Length: 199
Ligand SMILES: Cc1cc2nc3c(=O)[nH]c(=O)nc-3n(C[C@H](O)[C@H](O)[C@H](O)COP(=O)(O)O)c2cc1C
Ligand SMILES: Nc1ncnc2c1ncn2[C@@H]1O[C@H](COP(=O)(O)OP(=O)(O)OP(=O)(O)O)[C@@H](O)[C@H]1O
Image (cartoon, rainbow, N blue to C red):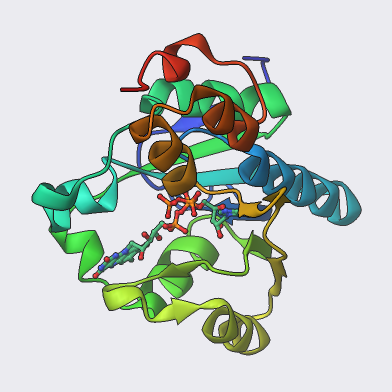
């Protein structure tokens, strides 16, 4: 971690970050799609001349909301932080995912969190992203919020590899089928710890 990089284990205090570009999601596995998304956010951060921040959640939302459906965890939160920092983000914000956060309307998350605490000028997410209570905050909702609150929104096209759209779910599915090669193809790197999760 370089001197200029920071990790917050909750929202930064008011005034710690005046302006930023943010990307948001769980980022389990840090597959090709996640890498492309972070790279797009970094381009945006350089264009605007503001820090690029990755916002993630711990634990995975389903661990809190539906533990019986909680997915196999591909990377620990510390590994996700390291992947993000290695790609060059200026900061990582790890939000404890609680029932309280899950119940927060998307508008509050955006206004009080992303705008209020991170000062986002631009938000870069995959075009399937959603946040907020019940997942109400999709890209169209975020774009409308941005017009109102003064930030830009990019809904990035999802990266595919061959026939498959890259996703953490796709990596897990390949591992569950014992197909290490397919899992690593979607992932886009040879990670021996993830490869060892194949059944
Ligand atoms: C404020 C907030 C509230 C959320 N509430 C819910 C919820 O009620 N139900 C749910 O399944 N997921 C909820 N989530 C999780 C999101 O739907 C989503 O899984 C999360 O933002 C990570 O995005 P990603 O799945 O694209 O990584 C919430 C997320 C945020 C930020
Ligand atoms: N293939 C992809 N290309 C570009 N961005 C993506 C891709 N997949 C997910 N994203 C984006 O990356 C961020 C983190 O997403 P998330 O952690 O939910 O990934 P995921 O792979 O879709 O996970 P899961 O399969 O568990 O739902 C979100 O903004 C999401 O829209």
